[in-house]
Length: 151
Image 1: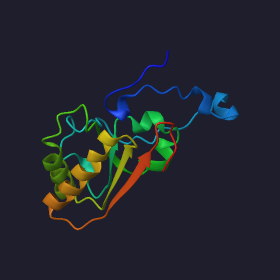
Image 2 (image 1 turned 90 degrees about the vertical axis):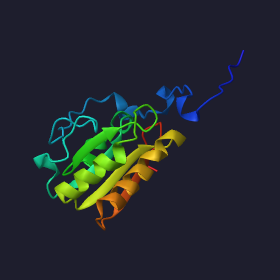
Image 3 (image 1 turned 90 degrees about the horizontal axis):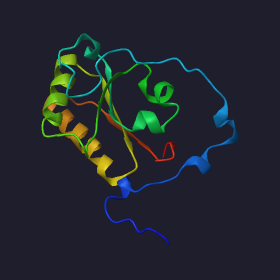
Image 4 (image 1 turned 60 degrees about the horizontal axis):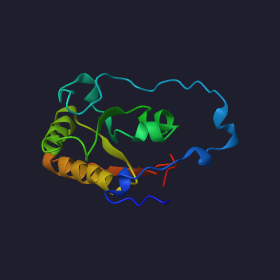
C-alpha cells in the first residue's frame, strides 16, 4: 500500500541511497575549512574578530550534510553562520546579521540553502540584513538539492 504524504514537501521522506555513484564508497579525507567557532547564528557575537573584512557565508543547517564538497565549494576562506529558517526562531536573524555585516565590514554575503520551499527564507533574511546594515554589497545564492547536487 502506497503512503501519501501531506505537509511541507521539504519534510517528505526520500530514500537517496540509489542516487549515489559507484565512487561514493571510496574514503576520501577532506581537510576542514572551518576557521572559527561557534557557527550557529544564535551563538556568534557580531563583534567577533573572524567577521572583520570577511566574506560572510550564511548557510542553512542541512547544506553541509547534503553537499559533500561543502567545505571546498563554499566554506573555504569565509566566515560562516548557520541557521534553519524553518525550525529556528528567526525574528532576530536579520538584525543580528546586519550587525555582523556592519561591524565586521563584510565584503560579500553568500547564502547556501536547500531546494525545499521552507529554506528559501534564508535568502530573504540575508537580503534584509544587507539592507539594514546600510552597506551596498552583493548577495550570492546557491541552492543544494536534497540529493546533494548544486543547482
